[in-house]
Amino acid sequence: MTEALENLREKDQVVLNQIDQGNDDVQKITEATTLENYHVTYAFEKLEDLGLLKVSKPEGTVERIINGQKRVFQHPKQAALTEKGRQHLEQLETDGFDEYENLSHRELVKKTHQLEADIRQLENSLNTFRQQVVEKL
Image (cartoon, rainbow, N blue to C red):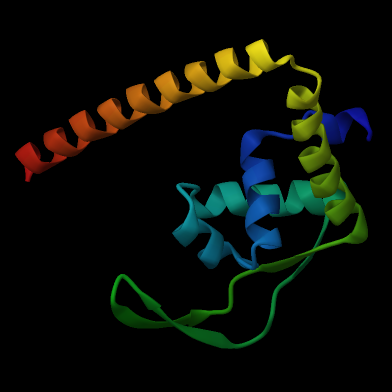
């Protein structure tokens, strides 16, 4: 892979993964993630320039249920993975497995314990955040 592909931002990777999962337009991606419209639009442009996506702007309107309400709006930009985009995602999957494949049993156990501790810490932070939100409401 080229250096440009290796240095994609996390937001760009999120957009690629969302498209791979079937969320193929700006509105669907913003609804499924914490990204704003302008982040997704910029990622579409960047990823299309790199040949990872094919972006289009369908004509007409689309009707969707958003936050429990029926909405009709101009069809948002839509994207599809190119073959190069699919290959990039497959390579990322393979690279992720290689990281753990070469660890010893002891290293894997240590890594697992560290990840479990990280998850507990994140859960505690999330619970604290939830309590703060409830208190503000």
